[in-house]
Length: 135
Image (cartoon, rainbow, N blue to C red; front, side, top):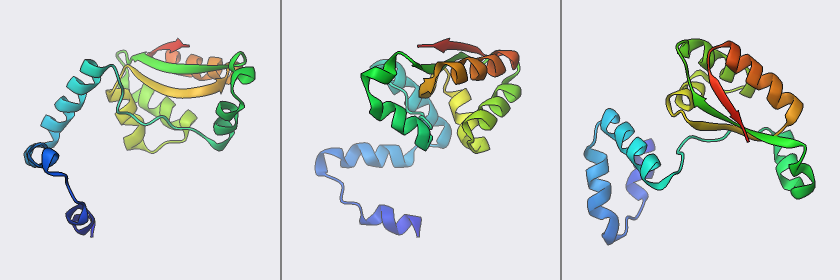
């Protein structure tokens, strides 16, 4: 069923060759390509998990800006599994999503989080061995 959806997508002629090359890549090659593109353009392909409460904070704009902070995972450290478990627990993510965030470090874990909650989250991650940056 997934293949049918892909087949229905009309690919503009200027992207056909690129799409064909991407389709021929292995998962490891695609992973390496994503990392290169992240470094080249200074972006992150990892999804930032946002809860409904966080959406309200982000929509609040500038007046909420002083009481909220962003959490970025800068380094995983030696105990990768503990870091994955901590992220999975706090952000209520699945195992794969949490692992992808850890593998993509440095990566933004959450934006617009209350400073108190962010400090607790940072403590849990640092206890697991990760290095965190609060922005």
